[in-house]
Image (cartoon, rainbow, N blue to C red; front, side):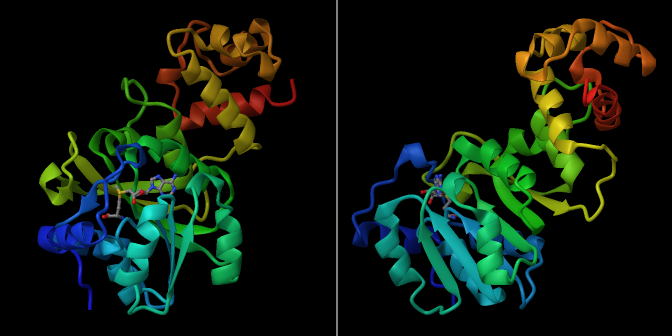
Length: 287
Ligand code: SAM
């Protein structure tokens, strides 16, 4: 039975181990049982699932995951939490704790080792300072995944769903929408955490597409174009892309492709849909 999930249970563990919250690791622990249950039910964990939890903290959500999944892998960067996790997870024999920075972990190798290379589910209350690199890494590194159910800053969840024309639309929105079908599951107030963050949070579930909704010859090249376009947000696409030396494109080549697409040569990346970037990518690749 899960023994964590309320403010008093978390406070007791924190004081027993004299644990100091480390702001630099984005430590805001969940202390609301109904929210924990909401996340777990949104993740739709089945008894044969292998789940990766990023940043287990003191193991609150990990306990819930261990009760539902076949195997849980929990990757935690903070050494001070490892002895705590030993205690809070001692009841469970289906969890492996890895004391590492998630950005240095080969997640595909974990899926190989713990799930015979079959798709895993990611469930996490993410450290907000590295949400984007974590999500981009999972999506772009060909990790076998079924879904990603994560707590993120509310604004970041909104950005994941934004379309062309919005000021928050960018590389993250395009990567999320190319690889996944995103759904916001819940908006979570600061009171659900200890300590309380300054911002609201959202739980978002990203269901990985078996087939991407847009076809492109090289997704890698398309995302190089996308990154270059949004790095130079204020510039027109033709200036932005030709300024990005690593792409090796001339302004004329970009304009020619835009004209072929029936677009103006002064168009900006923020007005381009995923399909537009895919078409542009196929026209420019190999130039
Ligand atoms: N899952 C716990 C919960 O919901 O109560 C804690 C969530 S807290 C928002 C984020 C967790 O991620 C912390 O435990 C923090 O130490 C850990 N963390 C931060 N950076 C990390 C990294 N680069 N790799 C792995 N874990 C990290």
